[in-house]
Image 1 (cartoon, rainbow, N blue to C red):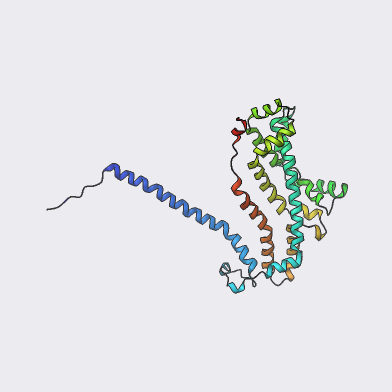
Image 2 (image 1 turned 90 degrees about the horizontal axis):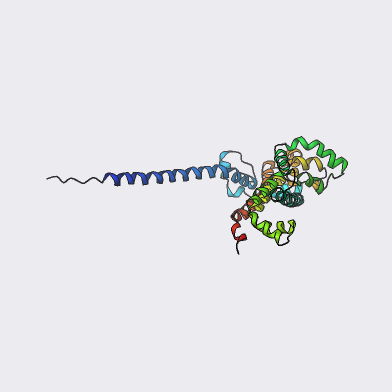
Length: 297
């Protein structure tokens, strides 16, 4: 006597199949993300490992070196060749000056284009967008003549900072953010007798922290890694940022070094470390601001 096993209902079978498909897709997505993250992070890992190797190993096995071959000798070598501390100070002053100017002028211009009504506002904003498509290399010669010959600002921090003092991308970011703020908030402040600068710095600025963080990160990476303009305006080694010092080391000193490959990677690690640290520090602060709460009460 045979016993027939009842088959699961058709509806239950289809539900099981449908629930299995999202799981398969989720596992496949995670595997793809892991592979992509590994491909993205491997060059940074290899840069750090290469900077620590006493003897360079360019073979695939060099990615997993012998611990006895790791030391900080390459960092000491690049420091003695280009003075890492002085180069970092120069890069910090150059980048800090650019960030301060970018924030100040970006806030003022962005607020004016977003909340002030004046003739030619649309044309001015169109001109700001047009400037973004002009390559900086086209302006190198007139800028060099103006800043170095006319102003005499060669081998100075001000000469490095001036061409980057106004960032049209920052103006655009602040303008778009100020346009999202409720117009009633600005009108109420004007009725209470507040001036435009008071409205900007006391009311609008505390609400635009996400935009401010974005501008800081965008403004940091450009001048920190900038090579061409500081290379043109600085001839003294004591005034050169780290990117320029590393380029000079590669072209002049590296050929005579015992381990030029490791020293160059050590300098690259030092150059990349502040940008990575800044991103890790600020990534958790990109939160949306509760703008509506500013108009309540």
